[in-house]
Length: 307
Image (cartoon, rainbow, N blue to C red; front, side, top):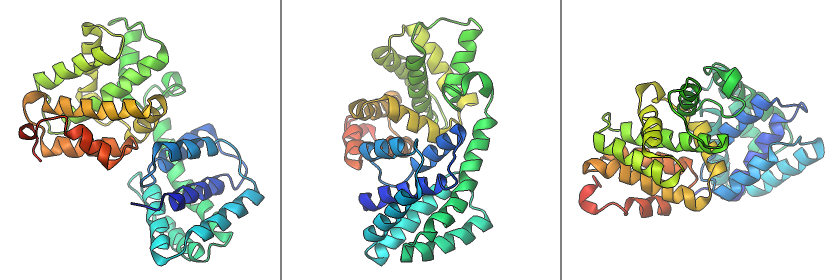
């Protein structure tokens, strides 16, 4: 288990670095949140602290205090490696670290060892690339002008909203609840597709669960479920979906939701290893503990699970 105090302090220093020139656009704030959300072993309370912290500029005095705090947190080579590993996870979250970013990472390794204020300048240069790539991905999402101000790159919500606008059906939910419904459907669809086949039983279970927890009838739930498991929504933006879902659900709701995912996987009689791993990844993305993941898994009888 990571040193959580060290990780959250590192997260704050990264935020301070992002604010080093005194200005961050709304797109950059959202992209930085996506990246920081994947710091290892954050719990919901710690994420809420970072989420709040990122929205306000960090001045020179506070930056110096944060660097000093980081220095105090790094008391061993293991701590130093933990901080570097967490930073690499954030920078490489989009799957690409450029040669110039690797060069800056090497500078930061030295700066973290000494924990001097120079680490902020190096982090500022380093974080610009990943934030820019995340922002560019968001800008290129379809129909951004109409929908991205509400929910960025949730393909399930995008398709639901578009088809509702075309009059294919009516769902009388507040917009925030519709987005939450779409996020749930998208994550459910990820599990159903994880073993490459969506069975009729899995689809029916998704429909039943959407009816159970949202104020929609069977036809409306089937409408959302069909979009959620469609090939066109296969690659939902996990960074943004997980982060936004955490923001609109209670911790108990998230734990109950992961149990629902196991029941979707078990609907055809067996939870496969691929499905278990998919749910494990989703559970981790929703900031749930390993113990909560195991508790959800045990809601499915042993003879219906691959492990």
